[in-house]
Amino acid sequence: MPALDESYVYCFQRSKVMEEIREGFNNEGLQGMEGRIANDAQDLEDVDIRRIGPQERFKTAAANMVLPAFVIRDGKDWRLVSHEEDILSRVPWREADVTSLFNLELSLEEKRDVELRAGLTEQLTGLVGHSGGLSGGALNIDCAYAAGHLLDTVPNPWIGYEFVERVFREILTRRKGEEKLVANNLVFILEELRKRLEGERDRLAQIVFNRLIDEDQMRFMVVMHDLGMNRPPRTIGIPKQVIRATRLDGNQFELNLYDPVDSETLNSLEHEVASFLDEQSQLYFWYRNIPHQGYYVQGWQKSRIYADFIFTTQAEGNGKKDYRKVFVLETKGRHLKNEETHYKQSVFALCNKYAKRTNWNELVPAMRGKEITYEIVFQDEWKRRLIEMLAD
Image (cartoon, rainbow, N blue to C red; front, side, top):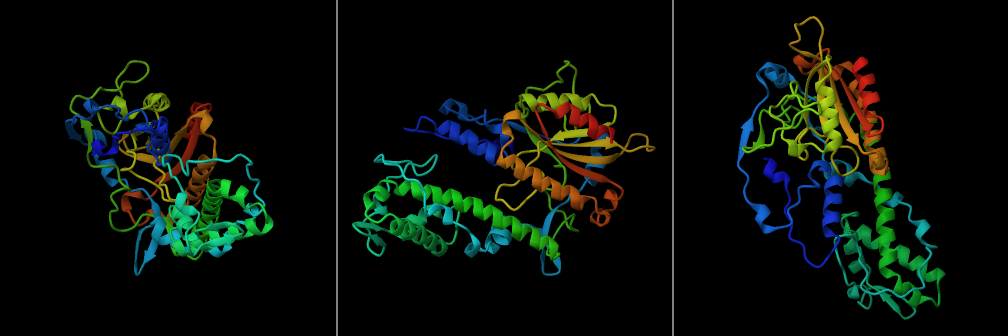
């Protein structure tokens, strides 16, 4: 239900927590939700929801659409890839390189009450002085306590312990007589270790992901049984008092799969893209993919990729009653050309590579002859790229 998309959070003490929550939504594929965070109890009133299905003229085509996903062998069958079970569990942590931290530049400024991570305030008084830790001169570090703060990156606490012990042992060995300086930088060192391990985790996870594909343990295809997420929803929920979105030219949307379009589901860039698509003669239908509920692609990183739009172009010679191509489209502001976007581009490149194989759609008769393309477009180029895509 759309109501479950919304996260209402009461926040105290931290002045930047709302910005951090919005950034978290963005990182989890919930880009449409950043502006819908309730700041007040009066905003938490229940919203009446009604269910709507596809427009009648698109209903058959939508019911027959099945999109591919990365699936893994499960005995004689296939199932959706699980990041933790299938990728993260196979990461060879012994190959993670943390040697760059051994000569880490440390701050001479003494710091107290340091924020360990955005959104969490930790007074790590327990990091120093516990028994059973790593001793260096007058400094005694509880590696087990420190490793607990790496669990979101390294789920195995024993492996986390080994990384903490190794890094702090090397630093203390190379900085003999500077134990106080190391003590003043404990949280900084631990945070740098976490960031380094995040990068190494993703690097090694990509190797695992590609190896599973090469060994035919993983495929990008449609499985025989319905996965739910790989079809357009049979119904979606919209507020009973919905504010209907219209095209930028003021006309009603006509080629939207679900009618009406809730104006709250489109940001400014998405509104421009939707308006442009709706005006194209080649288009069959389009719809806004539902963040955190709709179709997604699971790559080697934890976060699933929920594209913004799925749209189709008309098939020729059938009286405009079916589609020929399917496009999975992600839109990005011009300022979002970052590592996360580069990762999504890499995953989409794999999708396009394996979607070109003809055998993936042979399992679903209605998808035979259909083509699918995955694309990321940026704010400063989206119209040109869409014209090129539609002309192909």
